[in-house]
Length: 290
Length: 290
Image: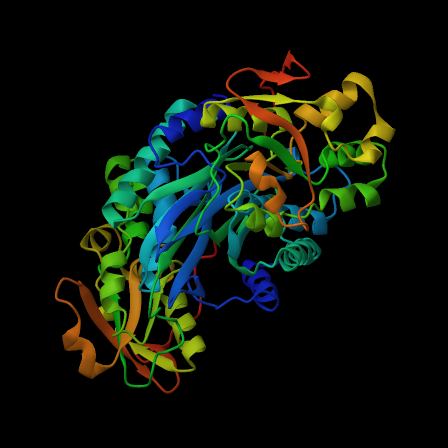
């Protein structure tokens, strides 16, 4: 089965929110729970350092917490590898701890296993009084993204040309926890861009039962990517390559001025009644499948 | 490196409790967090059904929560497989949901990935006002185990002889959450027997800085195992085969009568100042490494 079909099968039987993370009411607030699996073959290009592997393996879960507007309470990391050599473990720990530190999170435990392929599974546990769902976008809301788009696409290009230092830097993306928490209470919907901007827009739209209208020239593309590629290649990289891990959110126009000035974001379009368009043309729901 | 060395390396750098699960103070109580990775080759003998795989994959984390005396709040399950075929996913979900239901827990989310070997990682999130640690055993306490010992060893024997129905039944062990919660506040230390009784006794003793004195004839061995094997083979299976997932706990003699009558347990020995003995002979710290 395709992963999307598998998820449909699971969602039909599990109390799944269809959000970036599960929401469990607890003590007058909500626990926010998410887990993500990465492995060598499909997630880490040749040249990825063990530190980047560790960073990214916890950053993906922290990014899910960010997309819910959650405050991180703890991170768990399970690691499997055929050899479990000290250099690997130390490097992964370096990266995971550095990412947690930058994000204001704490690595509290994990598990170790021996397995044919390097595999990492992180779990993020957070708290949010008012978790931001995917399904709250309203017609007329502004559509915004944080930071810049195309970070992972740029990194992949650099890995393929052997510029692994800069590639590793780009791959160590900052989970947008601070921004996510500041957007909670203002954003009507939020999602982290893990499978490409196009797919994230479609997820927001389908779950909110709305449409979107987005402008290409408004997209905050990382300058390094525009230097590397152009035309259709650039368009594909920005729209359909996964793993930007920026926040895509919607916000009522009259609330946008109340967003904390430390949140770096760009308005890229607005929520419509129907239609899923980029520059008035249909934007396909095509994304990166992990 | 050996897994124990890896864990030592990690514990030196992560705020790890050295317990069955991490403890994160929150809202006047504690969140209890644990994650466990299982995979086809080392954890599931030929003949294991997909339902048993699903059951066991969440039961191991729930058992860690039980060992802390925690109430389960939510379970996450990440699954990777080369094919992700519908029969596999359905079977695993059947088992995971059945185990959660029996344990009073709820599967709230997860992740899906494609990978060469079937891999399952479950995360258990629970709450305990007074989590039961491993390091609180005191000289003179009684040493007890819940249920019966040798369940997984018996199952492995049945798998090897082709009696897969009974083997699968035994492999779907019940996480002792109810009993764990009832023991919290009375037990001075608690641990789930995941790597063999001998290793669990040594963990309790080393973390509590005490010794133990245990009697072979007191051990509640599952009758089916005594029918299958005897002598040294039986002794090895009971003491050194992992994954019984019963609770090993210590309790002051004057509190033992206050243990809720629904908790099925057996007194197997007592805590001493030093020495790690079974029937007055040194019991080696040898266990099953996953």
